[in-house]
Length: 307
Image (cartoon, rainbow, N blue to C red; front, side, top):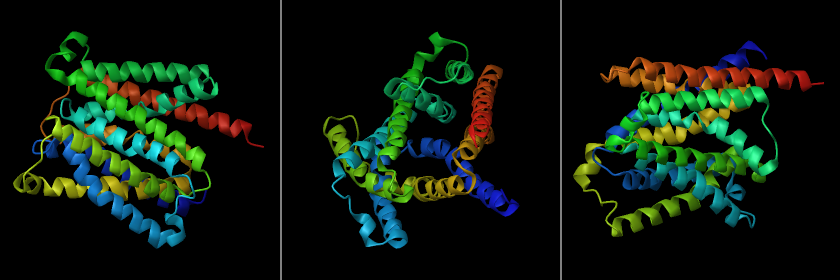
């Protein structure tokens, strides 16, 4: 790989790492004024049209058609956009940003497990060991070594919702193979539309049920900058630069660098005045080390199989 391509790939992924690393602390601030349902609905009120506009400008009008595949796109869009965001944002109301960030690192192990369950592709022993270590590390972060204490205050409830959200995203990513002839931008944009409809529907139902509450203009205005960040940086720039980084460096390198996202989250939380217990730092380090080790192991296997 030439140095120019390497530099451009790292630069692109760095934008995503910083953007996504700051997402959960910023979202937590927005949730002071909005509930998880309405925060998600307001984000996608803007995000869906932006994605469609970008798709139109890049690939033309013909790319806006579903080619009789709307049902499949709706299923994966519901998982990726409605499932991931609603579970994650509602969960974040009850837990801490660093918990949500470290739980999302389990998407790689969950993807390996999904391949095992659905396709019979058993992970290698090293991968299984790394997955186990990562799960233990996440458990140390979210419980601080005290599982009983984690049950108090609703934090564990929020953590479980974030875990379900992560599982939804895994399902969305697995759907990429069913749309292999579509570009990543087209898949993102066209699944976003039905996903957004489900977000609006779920928000309306939750509001009628008294679970969610319509925010006032003053409430929305009070977190306007947070919402702008979550739309433009998390939802648009983060995704576009992530896709560009994968194109330049490949998925294994992108995932390797993506393991730094929780580091950004923890750093921001320290800057906000939060102090972590030693066991939380150890747990986070264990997660990142396990995921990096497994990534390097998969890289060596890929090189060994190459002709």
